[in-house]
Image (cartoon, rainbow, N blue to C red; front, side):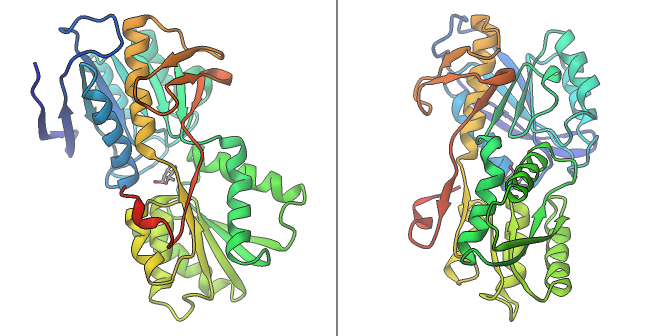
Amino acid sequence: MNKKHKALVPVLGMSLILTGVSASIMATSASAATKYKVTYIPKNLGNPYFDAIVGGFKKAGKGLNMTVKVVAPAQAGATDQIPFIEAAIQQKVDAIAISPNDANALCPTLKRAMKLGIVVLTVNGDTTASCRHASITPVDFSVLGKYLVDQTASVIDGKGDWAFLSATSTAPDQNAWLAGAKTYIDGGGQPGLKLVDTVYGDDAPEKSATEAQALLAKYPNLKAINAPTTVGIAAAAQVLSTSPLKGKVQVTGLGTPNQMRQYVKDGTVKSFSLWDPGLQGQIAANLIVSIKAKNLKPKAGVSFSIKGVGPGTWKMGKDAGIIAGPPQEFTSANIDKFNF
Ligand code: RAM
């Protein structure tokens, strides 16, 4: 039972990582023989941000009798995750955790999974609430839009033209933040800033770099690019790091410390933010076991505890939503303390 295995398995013509971890059950009434089969579907392959969420699942899996299989499409298109949900249904998994590329397009398939008794969780972004049992979001989405505008203001002294470089145009997390930013701006937030454009790099490094270059060419007065995507911010920073505009146009947003370290050290980037992505995977794994083994019914007001993870007790908010934690700012003063 207590063996770990890792293998590359070709499914639907792609290379996928299959990770199995078996260990003793923690804080559940399930027997040691119980094995939970879980499929986690990130937005797309090859994004270190989602690798960190997978890391959290694995860490939690050490204390739970759970097999976590990770499958994802090559691109983060609105409907690209559907075949992977269908495959998980066919494999009769106990739970599907998904970081959705669209709030509605996946709903019929996710609802079919729920009807068949599969636990469905959204991680890092949400679908319409009726299409999943619970959602785990990395931060309080209702304040992140304002946070991003204020973050932009802080790197250009509250004055100047700026643009958003987002991920895909259908990404529920990105769209929630962009809408929050717009509400804040429309309400008079940071009046010295002017949002001149919002462009989409699709969480693909090359397209993100091309979009960043296009912004620089189109807006000669641009003072900052805010990319609230780990792929976008790294691509924009890479473009600026070798441009004569380095230091004249600021790049900020949300990135992983490991991808951004070099751009902080070479002076391209003053500051950016993120949270611990792995925490969401840890919460998801534990919540699945609580639902399956302890018969927890996800809804607003329900609490569940996770030994050794974050505050210990987690409470569900509106529509069974769980918020993992606040954002952390990274600068040259603290970036070396983080490794993810
Ligand atoms: C990207 C993705 C993800 C976002 C993070 C910060 O990898 O777009 O959805 O939450 O960055």
